[in-house]
Length: 75
Image (cartoon, rainbow, N blue to C red; front, side):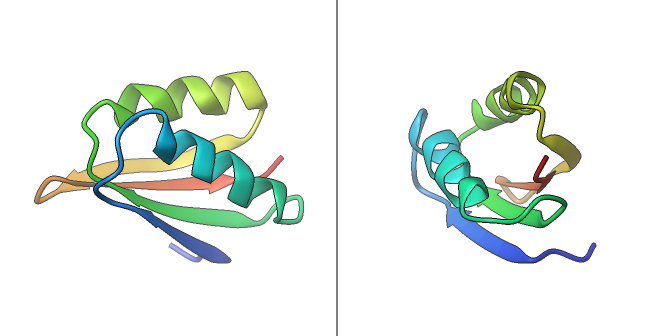
């Protein structure tokens, strides 16, 4: 999937992945896609809630080898 920016928050635990994602998205233009890599298992629920509460679109969420991948589209 095409993305405009990548954020690696592997090794960080809640709430840091969401806080860094929020900060990075705020620096991006509307419609831009952010690719996030995380290792916190709790991030799955966190990113779903974050997208719903902020209006940013969670385009994709997946996991492979204990690394969680998210694609978020800036509102």
